[in-house]
Length: 222
Image (cartoon, rainbow, N blue to C red):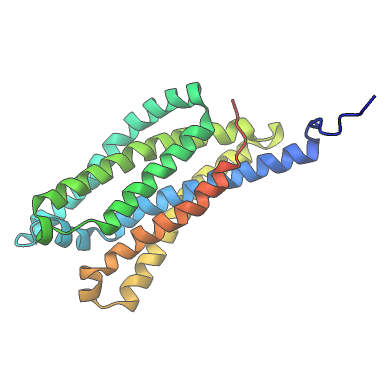
């Protein structure tokens, strides 16, 4: 009688622990990038205001940019509620990949979109739509990541692993401010205003590809 050598073996305890650690890292790296992309908008708000709104009234343009930023925050609770339900139906991994794609797409759109001088008020509308999508995704990411980390953490390390989510918030903000400082120090004010402000958003979109690759191998927690 022939032996079936292709029988899938159950994962060992060490293998399961390694998978949990990789999943935790994938979630954390993605969360850092989410907060990086979110903070980059705040860092470059004055330059975005000049590019995407009517520059004849700088104060009004800046206030409009900050209002778009606020709209993104208002979308976060809605994103948390809706994606929370989706994660119960389709799984945490599905939501964490979806929200990363939405944040990366919004970041890429901001980095490439035409300015107010090129297409008029349509630039302002595109910026608003990008930030609404990012805010919606950000709410789903934060809520799901908190739940996911707690579910995959070892029983004796749930507090420690849960704190990593909050470390990611700080890490993403530090990364955004560091890159912002680098861009503004290397380029002149004119260069930053014309095209340099786009660099952090394009950089974030590229980094998101690495985070998406990591998240493809995440284990499901529910």
